[in-house]
Image (cartoon, rainbow, N blue to C red; front, side, top):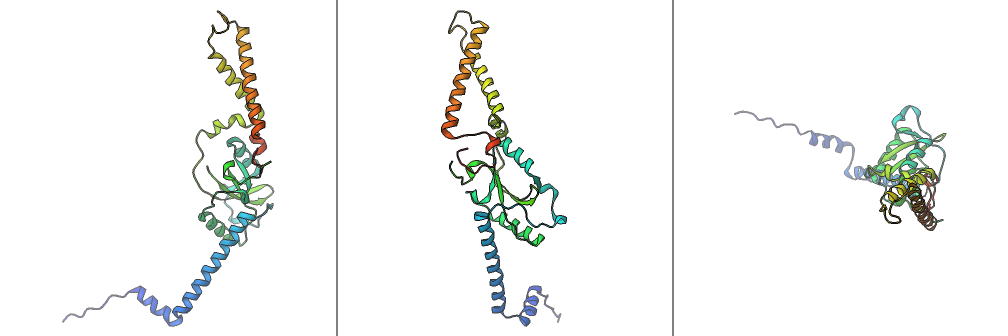
Amino acid sequence: MKLKIPRTNIEQQLLKVRNKSLTENKILNDVHSILDQLDIRDEVIQKELNQGKNISRNNFDPDLLETNRIFHLDDIYNICVTYRLRFLDSRFFKAEIPYEALMEIKKLEKAHNTSLRGFKIIAPSKLFKLENADDPLLFVPIGNNYYYLVHKWGNDLHPLRKIMMWPFKTLENFVSFLLVTSFLTALFIPEGLFSPQQSTTQFLMIFFFIFKWFAGLSIFYGFKMGKNFSTEIWNSKFYNA
């Protein structure tokens, strides 16, 4: 008769070793304690995101920083102005911050042995809870106007957003846009509408009146809605800007 030796179940052997030194109640209590500590840390981070104040720096370990996640305020300014985005404290952010961002924060805090504060976010104006007068990025300050990218989520910006927002970048851009739009509109005016044969002077007069009309509408809308150019609103906490 052939003797059949049973295979060794590692999981069962592991349980036997564990149960010699620990009771089930002790294990459950330890696990609950760990989970409670994690929940408390999550609440602290969430509170900092929702209510935290603006600070100038965090205590990072320079040797652990990734250079591709370090950005100067000038770079952030250029991106915000180009794509008409805001760079504001996270407490103004009204959309939900995903749990993955909290995990990245805790991962950084553990690696650098610190507590991160002064969170800031790059996002379109509509995602901020702004005071009245499509791609969020979460930052924390390093110091000397440098910021560290903690986490990015959501969808990428529309590929044409840079072009669409170009007229609103500066006053010069907007005037250039009005001039080009007025000129193209004047070209569509039928030549015999005002005289049998339109002269260059008459065309320029039509162009001038169309420009005045577009400019007047733009000024009226801008004042009525409290709008401003991207160079002025990129870090403004006021909604009507």
